Amino acid sequence: AQSVTQPDIHITVSEGASLELRCNYSYGATPYLFWYVQSPGQGLQLLLKYFSGDTLVQGIKGFEAEFKRSQSSFNLRKPSVHWSDAAEYFCAAVGAGNMLTFGGGTRLMVKP
Amino acid sequence: DTAVSQTPKYLVTQMGNDKSIKCEQNLGHDTMYWYKQDSKKFLKIMFSYNNKELIINETVPNRFSPKSPDKAHLNLHINSLELGDSAVYFCASESQGSTEAFFGQGTRLTVV
Image (cartoon, rainbow over all chains, first blue to last red):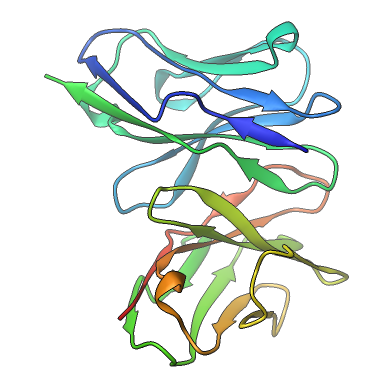
């Protein structure tokens, strides 16, 4: 079955520290991959997406993600986290059937 | 000029009632979706709908029904509301052939 897994439910980092949020997918073929952010009480905003080509994808708000086929991963990174980055982050994929499937989310907390 | 808008933003109602959540998109997209986000933040697709096809997630109770008066609207009707229906419901839309979905701000439904 197609699935997206985010192993970390919660992550806490200090402001200014680097961040990596993990995402693994299980699909027959490489799906299209996305990262969304959900701020408290808000909807989902697309941070970045990967369809093909360069495996390092740049997104908004200083985020980037790297697609690694050998690891079936699409981890999200940011070199220096800001307090405003505290939110829920969702990895998602679209494969056969064209349905967007989400991972369980990772809640990011930022310490001052 | 909100791209995908949902109303109401909050809805509190008693068990057994029938309610509707409205969704409108002004992006000219062909396909619209409804997602349910439970208390653990897990996002699950409920329906996918375009002018040709309605795809229903088989786990969705038939008390839930999407109604599309036109291409720009996909409303969600819920009959005989139950406590377990309490969640945040997100509407989304995308253009046919695209895989980038745009989300509304969500409707927080509380059944008491």
